[in-house]
Image (cartoon, rainbow, N blue to C red; front, side, top):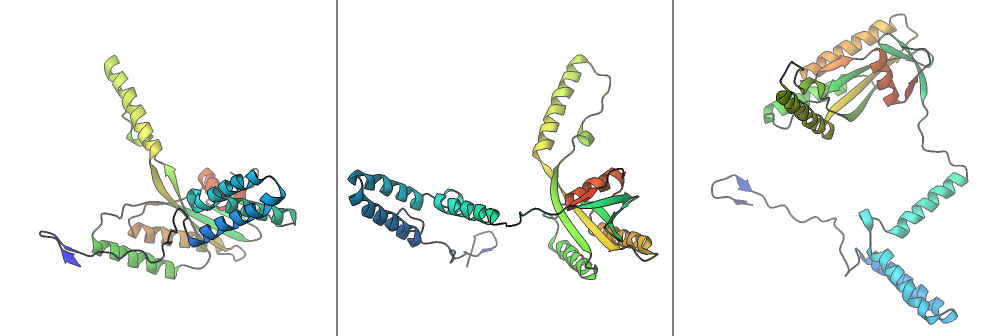
Length: 260
């Protein structure tokens, strides 16, 4: 620990303890041992075939042992692919999510026998530049919110391109020069918005639909959740219609034909 001449104290972080120890051109001793196995296999095959065959085997073994694109060797990727194909041929179930059929009724989904789901969409909020006290307060509020919520809740976090329409200049009667500048500015804004994303959080609340007051209880839970998220600085929207159908598709609930 030290201190800068005109700044806060500096703390030097130690080196990582879990990093791999390299052995020459190989990422680890295991890779070096694998290269020796390839070399030994080539030496055993060479007397029974052409003697020059040992050199290509040695070169291939060195490449497979020393080159690890994206952290994994090529032979390891091939072994994983063959294992996956073997499980598929032996009758393994595909890793696909079963999609349930949902019926849209106003601002909630009816899934299966008596299951009602309401979905809220919340926009992200910039927290990086908030004071530490405010960050601590919002963290405590969100932790309390999670503890008080029932188990029948699901979160889905994603990112969407920023819409360019709200930030584009209004179309007014302008001169030819100003209109050309406006078109160029609009193209620049559209490009910037496509290259940047905004956070979208979907919250699904579910409840049993057999009770007479199931719809009202679900509406109350959605209203309270929206108010609590608004206290965190998040703008929430209760989805309905087409927006509800699209959000349900994100969770894996396909809207039934004929539902709005």
